[in-house]
Structure formats: C-alpha cells, structure tokens
Length: 140
Image (cartoon, rainbow, N blue to C red; front, side):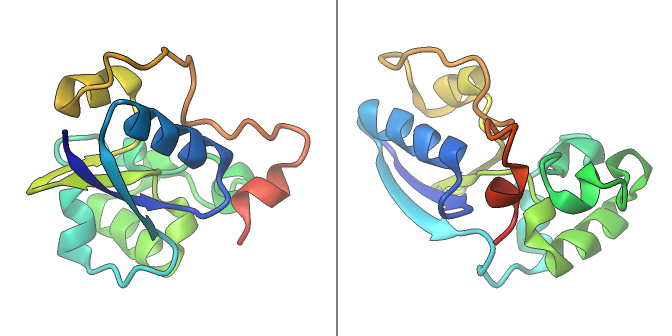
C-alpha cells in the first residue's frame, strides 16, 4: 500500500472522510495543513497536471462563493498567484505518493491511482456538505 502525503484544511468534513477511505484501503496517510504549507509556484502548479485552470479551484472558498473571484476567467499565472495569497482557493486535497501528485478527490481516479477497491463509493467527496453553515466550513 501507499504512503499518501495529504494536504488538507484541518476540520474539513470531506477531508476527514477522504482520509478514512484511504486508511480503510490500507494506505498510510500523512496529513499536512494545506493552509499553512509554504507553497512555491512551481510546486503548487505540479499538483494540477493537465487539469483545466478552472478545476484547480475550491468552489466552496468564500471569495468564489461571493463572486469576488471567477475561476473561469483566470490564467494559469493569475490562478497560482491568487492561491499563494489565499490557500482557501486551492482545490482540496492535494495528495502526493512518491513523485506522483493529484489535486481533488475523485474517488474513481484515486482508486485507479493507488487503489480504493475495498472502499464504499460516496457520491460527492469534494463539495462542502455544510449547506446551512458554509462559514464554518470555508473559513479558518
């Protein structure tokens, strides 16, 4: 099984569920705080691979929900600059296994990558489930 460095927002319900799925599949999870990590442009960019820039963003971030930032309108350089200034904008989790990197938690993609076959399928592990209390999920 894999050792997964898992960059999360501590206290995020979905990140907790994602870590449990990884551990249940036999992976060792090393959790790190995405918000306090000392990100450098090149290092952060590497997690997104060939993803479209709009898919790099955490759509539950207050600045996006309030219309202050439009992920569709950002260039790669603008997106990275915004994320370095405000890590809440980064799609979570960021995961690393050896030299392989991934952003977000598409359960099928993670299963294909390192294996989750023994895990139950959960329909949405990325959207914030706190619909009535968004502030507590997206601020820190």
